[in-house]
Length: 392
Image (cartoon, rainbow, N blue to C red; front, side, top):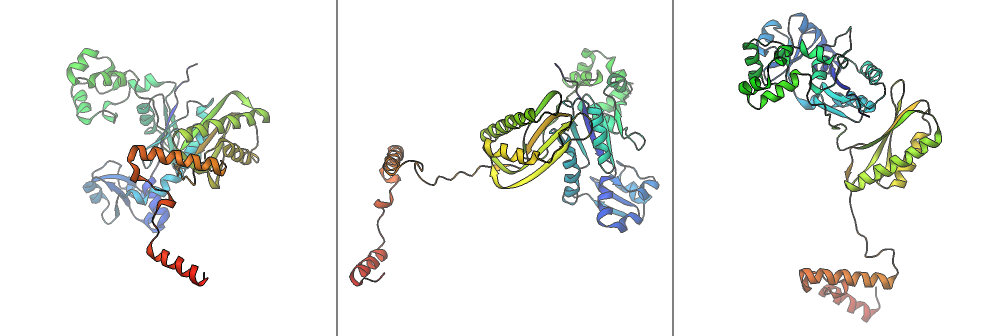
């Protein structure tokens, strides 16, 4: 059974200026502009009241807000704030792909009621707005239409109508020179572009013509990377309907522990932090997060950890379980001995076989046992002195 795509583009309104104002409240008393590449990236309410808009040239903004505060964008100043809102997004889906510090794409397609899930998420985000679509570009475009009155602009059910009236100049996924040329030729909306044949578009734009036609027909890329949290390993188990039976949930935990362990082993990774998320039929996911003393990779330790975390979760109308280990690290492998679990005679034999193999490949002088290593003269003298005097 095919799953209808439901992509949500989340953006945080006035993310950069509100972050600075939270850190330094006095900045809210004057016009505040954050700029990047000589353009306005964000403006606070006082700056916007003077006519300053996102995307405006920096020189023009300085004329409108003379004496205001102008901050050059530096990523490190906003990273903590970005992680806080992305962590909330990660509770709702394993597919979170940030493409700016204030914007990210999420794939909610696998949830039985993605619109309710989207509403719950956006309401939790301070300044959150959202656009829902069946492709990446329609979700991004819809997010620009969201407002205080309509926190989520959802075009999943009317995608073609939305695309038909969408202005060509606003389609950021096309190069600016291509948009300029289409408008110059008289094609100002995507619906007008859709009326052009594939042959005409190829003649005007070469291989890019095929991509333009796909976008104009409402198609496009619908893949969302599982890019956040970084270095995470995750798995999920979705049920046919809502589940409340503890036996079924226990079996699900065993399955997830086994699959997560296999992935960790295959990728040679391990981690100490584990996240358990119960997707509910109605309402936001129930999330639990715990950091353990030792790194985990084996199925038994993962299963025990999941059961421990599950104890205080109210089991009601569960439609899916997700488990994630964020920020994993490469496994450190240390060999303490040859055949550590064998008896002394067999350990000696195993060591001899291993040494012979090394010598056959790298030569007789490539490896020596401890008994073959020469004793330093200083140790020889001390040993002789101890034997002669009896002093230790």
